[in-house]
Image (cartoon, rainbow, N blue to C red; front, side):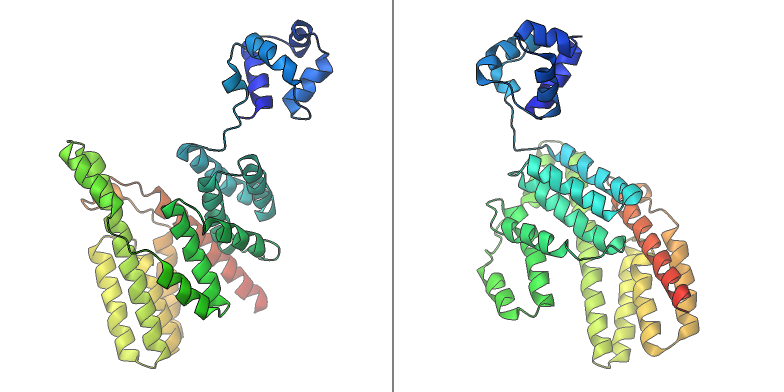
Length: 328
């Protein structure tokens, strides 16, 4: 919380008007008003008296903390999604930049905002102009972070950009410079929680890892299927698509996660009627919320993240159909 917010909040809690606070401090009401709007700062000689008046210590009054809690960051990123929906992508990007300027050293905020805005650019069909360069500069900065998790998350995006731009030598240099992970932190935490009798927390970690692992396997198989199609190996592609369906179904993943493979196969083979039928099935799948509560693999997880993604994919699909209809 910034100093202007602290002054305003504490004054109001004490039931003081700006005029009353000004009178006790020997300044004008206009000066207090400027402090609370962030237009100016109190004179340094007034700080002890101001802290006493507000009932706080100087450390609290001068709390220019550069860190936000994970909950605060999550709440802010969620609010960005609401801004995109109501005011548009540009307004959300501007809000994110303002927050980042407010907490310039909070790398968790920066990586969270960058990841969200990157995904939203695609999901909501925003133009890249002016935004791509800024996002890339954030990733480049975070790729030098001392926080291993943040650095790795940023490097994933840097590598993706370099591949897209044909900077393959740089991709190889980055990959070869990556340290080899020796210990799986979450695995060790789960084992610790189990030993401490915190079974629910251990299960949540294992379930999260299971969902991520299965999703990664499905994604890898999708890449293999696409490679088979590009190489003209239609039978291999069909076999891989069947494996994707089998793994996804057995693991209890939403149907739309494997239907996209079947749609790609039908499109590649020119089977228009089959593709149309699969697309209708995909739409129905996107309209069905994922409910992990009934699964022994996921029942300690929330389906919220997957279902939010489902909603955005549905919107993206509807926009693509509208564009196709307009073009026709």
